Amino acid sequence: MRKKIVAGNWKLNKTFSEGILLAKEVGELSKNEINSDVQLVLCTPYIHLQQVSDIVSDFKNLSVGAQNCSNKASGAFTGEVSVDMLKSIHVEYVILGHSERREYFLETNNMLKEKTDLVLSRSMTPIFCCGETLSQREANIHFSFVTQQLTESLFHLDADTIKKVVIAYEPIWAIGTGVTASTAQAQEMHLLIRNHLATKYGQDVANSISILYGGSAKPSNAKELFACPDVDGGLIGGASLVARDFVDIAKSF
Ligand code: 13P
Image (cartoon, rainbow, N blue to C red; front, side, top):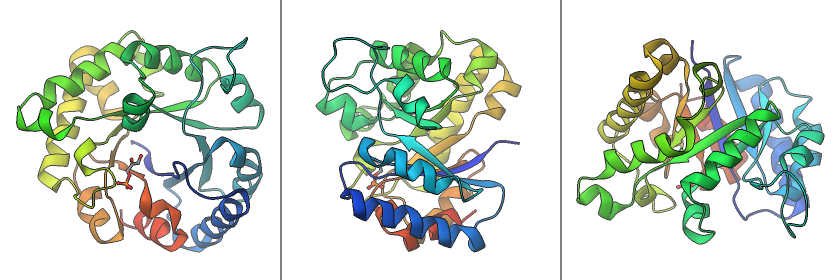
């Protein structure tokens, strides 16, 4: 059975004290309200990670994730944070290739391949993001664009290793816009991603990989999105900044 995951991507939000409060609130709510088969992940800014890592250890459904890591293992790379640093404070997940990092920080498929390898080599779980722009969708190249992102960054992995990756489909036109992909659009792309994985690795491997949806997911639309057969959870931006909303989304399976 695939893991059900709801991950919150806090992005560039929350001071240290605000973030700690949010993590504790999510923990307390999750304790009584979240089914044991749903994993919540708090993907915080770097400075919150160590403290949030301590907080989540008190809650069985809760994990901590980073939003990025360096594609270098160590050395003279000012301002970077390495996988060893993340591992040393018990970070479990790392978001890789978010569209904002691809767009504003010029991350390439090849760079993301390097990051994926580093994260996996330290036994952490990459949440690998893919997704098209509106103009790519309108030009009907969204399927080929997303499959290329996956192929170039992940398809060097062997079958046992790719099973350890979580994929997040985030159509760029739905991120932070209030426009959510319809259930038909989400299911169509998730199935395409799973079929693409199956072509390379076989159906059993493809069936074992969790594929999350991201883009204006909120309590009011999470239920219908999570009901899609190939949607295994969500990567949540804005709504993850409010504990009640985030936990309500996680209750939507
Ligand atoms: P929103 O939920 O704010 O649209 O953001 C989605 C996202 O980018 C999560 O990584």
